[in-house]
Image (cartoon, rainbow, N blue to C red; front, side, top):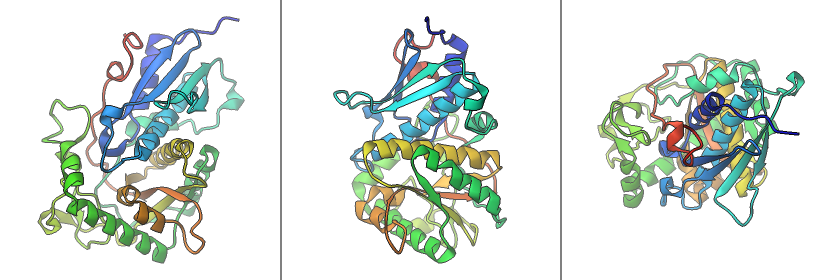
Length: 332
C-alpha cells in the first residue's frame, strides 16, 4: 500500500511548530530531514549550537530536542496524522535523536492531547517578568501533573518549605554561574543587542527581564554580571509556584522524554492562561542538581524546575525559519 504524501504546507507548519519549542539559551539545537518515501522526519542534534561549559554532556540539548519532538507530535495530530516516535533509533549514529514517522489517517479516538495544545504552541514562551499573587487552582495543578507521566516523567508541586529550599539551591547555582569566567563569556555570546536585530537564535537583551528585588526568586542573569545589585529589580511574587519535573533514570532517552513532558506541561499551562519560566541553573552543576532531588527519599532525577503563575507575557525570542533547520530540499 502506498503511503500518503505530506504536502508542503503541512510539512512547513509542522516544522514551524517544532522550532517554536523552548531551548537552552534559545540555541535551537536541532535539524530535520524528511524521508518522503516513508513520510518520516529525522530529528538530529546541531552540535554547533551546543554549550560546552553550561551543558558539557548535552543533557540540555536532548531536553530541547524532546520538546521539539513533542510539538511535532501535536502538529501532526492537528493535521490528521498519527506520529510514531522512535527515540535514539540508530545506536551507530548518536547524533540522530529521534525519528517521527507520520501514519495517516489518524482515528479520532487516537488523539490523546487537548485540542487547544496546537494553538498554544504559538502563544507559549518564557516570561521572566514578575507574576501576580493569584494562586494556581488545584484542578489546574492536577492537570499539569497528569501531563507528564504519559511522556515518561513526573511533575510535583513542592510545599512552601521545600520550594524555599529548592530556590536556595537555584540561588547557589546562579552565584556560581556569575562567578565562572568561562560560563559568563559563553552566556554573553548568546545575547544580542535588541529584538529587532538580525539574529534568529540566542536572546535579545529585551527579553531578559528584571531581577527579584527581594532576592527570593533567583532569575537568571544572562549577562553574568558579577554585581547583581546593579541589575534592574522589581518585586516578584511572594509565594512562588514551582513545579519539579523528574525522571526515574538519567539516560539520554530520559532526557528526551523529559523534554517532551516539559513541553506538554508548558502547553497545558499556556492553554490555562498561565505563564512560565525555567529555573535551569542547578541543572548545570552535578552536585547542585542532586540536591534538588525530592526529600526525604531523594529518589529520581530532576530535569527541570518550572516557575508558574499569572502575569504579563513578556517579550518573545526569535526563531529560525523551517528552511534554515532542514536539509536542502526538505522545505521549498
